[in-house]
Length: 178
Image 1 (cartoon, rainbow, N blue to C red):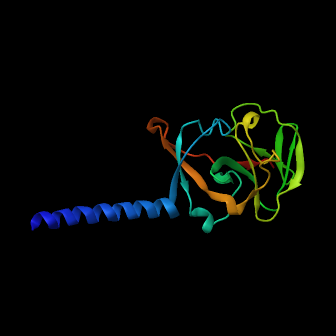
Image 2: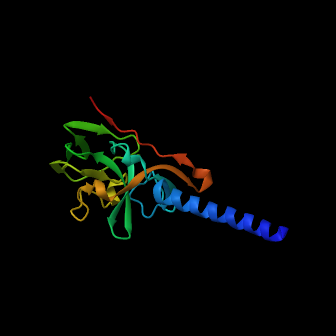
């Protein structure tokens, strides 16, 4: 009789743990693997990161957020928010301007050459995103990606946890030069 009770206790504990893990993954946090080099040096290929899936139910995306969004079914992208709805985004002489102010982007570690873009105003309900490795990034400058609908957001990346010796929080600091 005691063996059945112990077996039931173990089974119940395992089921509760599985249900809690599924609920956390479905509604709160999800793990994503970095594929490609478009977010280098902020993110490196094969790193694993945690994405907060609930944050944008309570807050709007902000300039500098590193987001995960569904580009097409079964294919997610990781990029940095450069413009939110109503912002005028322009790339001129390899500098990014938002609402006429050049961005200071401390997460970029090299001189970046970019073709001129815009000016374009980000439509309501959309974002303008760029990869940190601007030489090799399929982002809002590319007509195949364009502006990102808020409906396609999966969440905000906030922590790199794998490999453990590279664990760190993700830098989201972007400043307008004034």
